[in-house]
Length: 485
Image 1 (cartoon, rainbow, N blue to C red):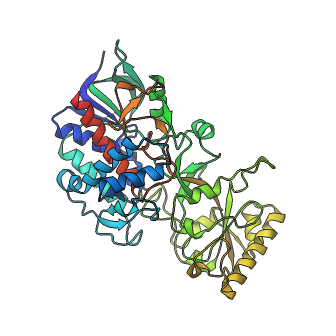
Image 2 (tube, one colour):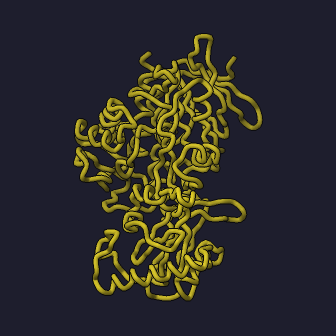
Image 3 (cartoon, rainbow, N blue to C red):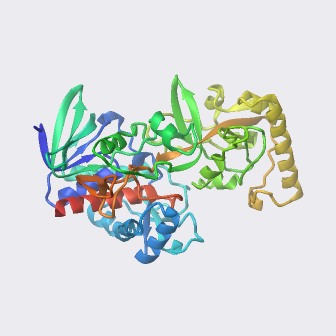
């Protein structure tokens, strides 16, 4: 029935899949990694990330913090399981992976929440400041994981797209069907299948049907097309928080006829972000900090006009920001994995039309696609912002004083921004052991999940590195349970 059979079959060679495969191998089980991408075009979200991983210094406090951030979307025992394993991650890096030199780099994103003091994000390479000198941390982190896989001689089936789960007569998931080089292949799993194949960032139907607004664009792995959602649904899995994602404002551009998405860095000041009517609507400093809750400022719906007036929105800046460096971060996202090489002075992106210039704010706005009336309002909005900066007046949206820098050095520029981010978090519902549950809350025998696919996070992103933390923790937890049966 099966072309190959292993104790554990892991779908997806990212952080979650790596943790699962290493855990299986170190326990003496046979395991295979099934990866959709060909080896020469492998762009896991882990490699595209900033390389941060959330850890927990005290389990009870960390679990309470994760529970608050989940806002009722995740059972407490699942958050507790995450916290318990996150406390062990520093030792796991040292004992199992090695060579990463993980050091503290950030704390909780919501420091006023209960238990926030127990959250510490770590990063490879001795990076002590958030983002500063972090070039290559994501690729270095993934390369460390991949090297650990290679040392164990764990087989990887590249360019193999899993499509359906195979159940035995008792309904247990016993393997999966896939295609490789146009040929069908069936892989058997004696102990379990772990779905660690990412979210649905690049499936337009799933995004349209489930996320809070549309369109939404992502700068994570372009091969995350919802395969795990469909496979799990095919065997009766229940879904949870399908309307959730990790987001902020991002750039979405046409590159040689193909869409390409970028994380956008609006720092250094000054900067103003306006809605489609040309008005400010939020504290832009949160976007400058790359906080994930800025996403919620973008998705407001206006029933009177049946529109999302901030989708898209418009970022305005001047020549000083244009000369300050690339508008994206070169150490993670599309640039980090070689999908695009952003110019140092942004001149190439102006030439491509991604950055719209103008002698005035209004002219730049029109060049970016704003209607004339809204462009004139944007001009007035930036003028009012500049006056506040010069007069030292407090910002009505709560911007810190040191970010209130005038936009006053022509030419001026406008970039269209969209809601988006690194990944979706919805998918198959799972329990504290990583078991995927059916519509009645019962485990589907032999089926597990880890990582972005049905991530154990809820309404708010807990901390820099939460994605990788959850993936690593539940990759281990899932396999340990599968092998304990």
